[in-house]
Length: 472
Image (cartoon, rainbow, N blue to C red; front, side, top):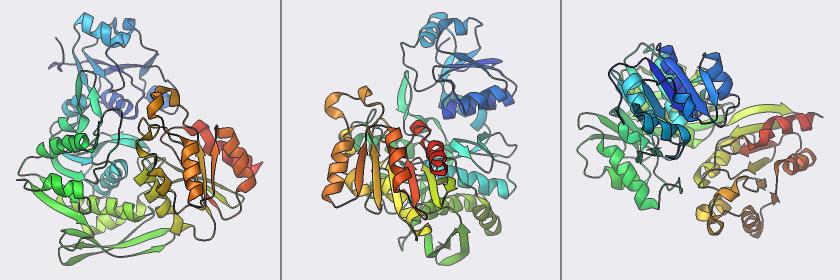
């Protein structure tokens, strides 16, 4: 027994099943005909309903008795600690167990060409664009992606085609395997969008992050391909001297894939794609921002390598509906547009504001930020955040809601950030809780304004509450 997957599996239990990736895996296993159970502390919509609609039994809380039926395999989520009651009981019973990426490899990626999208930023968007391109071209792909893709109304798909698109996460795998998740895969094509410091709860410094990505690139076999962004000095260092086939993408003259002429014609973001010295045509998408043109470009390069024609690529980009929580317009009330976005890293905050700005030229851009991740609640980016809001007209910053989880000397200060913004003559305000932000915005927002709400969490349902308050 122990940390491996047996040859014959009929029943599977997932510890911490309500995570985005774990929930997707549970649904895929159910679709494959396995008996699937799962447990979690945080059982609430939408993931709880998503799983229940699939007929998956969700057991509330963690209890060793949940394993009394002796499942053939236990899949352990990376949020599960070794002192978790189910993890303890699993080991006592000598049950077979594995991590989520090990299970994805065995049950989903096996026999398919894996397209792995990695990088600090843009993984979910790039993965979902590529999956939609392959679907539009009739390749019937499978995918596991860290967000709900609107074109599929799902974050996973089991297709009959020979390709699977995987979002490659640098976060650690499980309590028994502290390596990054993306090290478990064997990519036929890999995309690398960016390498920046993030996940301060598991990475010590930039050198530590680069070690993880160095390992990722080392998993790519010489006959396979890495599509790598061309304006990141850390990527330059990581790909130098490699014996793999590397194609660079971006705007540098020497790169294989490049963005040519581009323009913004709301709701369209238009751009030309160049392959070597040839133009592949002009494309348009409703995704905002230069960073999304670059995400699309990397997906074009991967799709082309898989034999997808430019006509299908053009149709896919025009009809791509985006990912929930990525520049998602949640509503417009009395001329005020409320947009939801997942941005939390300073680079992502800056690029998201820069992307949205030209699409709403007539009003103000009001940025609302909740630091919630393990990194954004630490003071590692305290100074950098002061420059992330340069293109916003008005800035609201909430007190981090889970600050007690962070050691006292390492905590991020929203009040400090607002003070720094005011020194730069920015119109910035600090709020201890969400209700005060809503009350402020009802008085401050005017017709034509855009309220861009950025958080990787639920932010106390601020989007719907604000829309209701504006209407009332």
